[in-house]
Image (tube, rainbow, N blue to C red):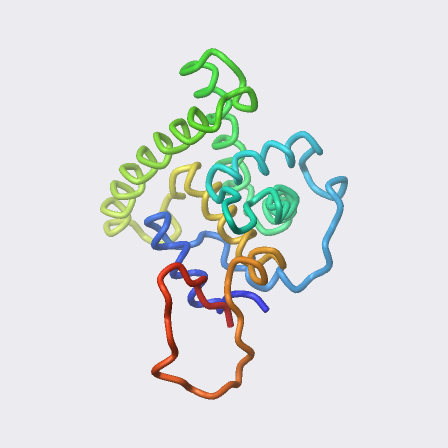
Length: 199
């Protein structure tokens, strides 16, 4: 009961300004869950990924990233689905969050207030947007094999969105679900604040 693949990829591209980089990840979501010990990351890493994810998808009247334990799935996906270059960029992105927290606020990211965390990640997201636009313009002149990865924060944000909306929590408690096939209703009522659709 997850979001339609095409819609999920469009949503990720719209939210990050660039296409989702791990195309083989979509096939992975049907495989059994692994433990953190079967990844390249530690329990502390997974907890950190969850904290970063919670800033991107906070709990409101619906569950947030930590409720879906996106950190574990992120660790699994990076270990199993990312190329060495993508893994390196993802790890560099995590390191940059930690470094920026220290240089901006003089303390560890996990000790920042919610507002400080949000401001820090917003600044990285802005930086990523500028970087990705430059990459997009430059990539038009490059061959496919020479195209560079998006900004490292973009990888983190994409993976947070992907793992959340393919999780049971994201698909069942945040999105609305109607089984397909179902009858078409072009005049289905919509009320402001309704959840998005999953198929």
